[in-house]
Every structure is written in C-alpha cells, then in structure tokens.
Picture (tube, rainbow, N blue to C red):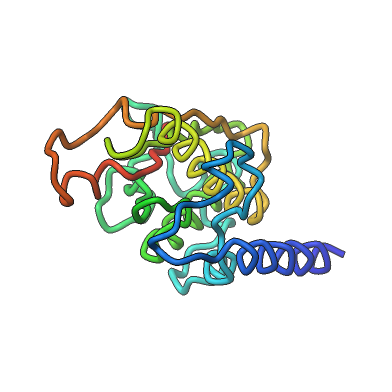
Length: 194
C-alpha cells in the first residue's frame, strides 16, 4: 500500500514537472499571474534522491536523536556542524527565475527528510529568498514558490506537513550585497531554519 502511494506521488510529480517545463528565458507563468498553482519544481531525480547512495537511512537517526546523541548550543545534533555530513548544508540554491532545486542539493534535501522523519518533534522553517532583480511582489512570490518546492520534496519523502513552516523574504534578506551574477546566485535560495 505504501509503495503504491509512493508510486502515485512520483507519477504526479513527474506529470507536474513535464507540464511546468520551460526555457530559462521564459518567466514562470504561475509566478507572473500570481496563481502559484504551477508545477512543484520537483523532477524525477529529486524523488529518486531517496536512494541517493549516501548510505544514510532513517534508522540511523534514531527516534530520540539516536546516533546523534547530545545536542549542540543551537539544539541540533553535532552532525549539523560536520562539513562532511549533508545535514550541515541548510541552504538550497536555485537558478534564475526558477523554483526547481539545483540537482546538487537533492541529496541534501533527502538527508534532511530522513532526519525529520526520525525526529517527528523537530520542526523546520523553509525561508525562500530571491535576488534583487524583478519586482518586490515577483520576488516574494518566487521565494514562496521555492519554499513550497522544498516542502513538497520533503513531504514526498514522508515528512509531516506539521513539521514544516513556509516563509518568503523575497529580495529583503540578501546574503551577498553585490550587484553581479556571483552575488545574485547566492541570494537565490531556501534556508532551512530548525
């Protein structure tokens, strides 16, 4: 039964992704018209990230922190500070005018999904951001869509909606203050705030 639900979700996500494909030069129509009812931004690879080869499984996290043991000053296990652990990455990046997760971050989202599944009392706020280009309203909508994309990927892997919060800051909280492509790339992101 659970496998059937998973396959149904994969099929639905694939259909939505195909329906939402567009060139990099086109604006996402769902963002421009304010409907935000477009594709989730997920692709088959994002769902297949469940078996990303990292060797990490939900069982390793343990129901009560298990493998993670003591919590650090920020209330998170020490693995969140280990640069070799995907949990240490809490920023997900996106391309220009896109709410599709960059492929390099699919496994990071999968690691966070496994952590959240193993720790049902833990919550995360998905903070969507954009670069300074585009109108304020457009960037708020795009940041929200980016947060919803990450939330959808987490939920597709079994994370409870009650563990997730969504917020969009648009262009209001840049991490890079420059007015060039390298700065804009750093500002097109979703941050996972536990």
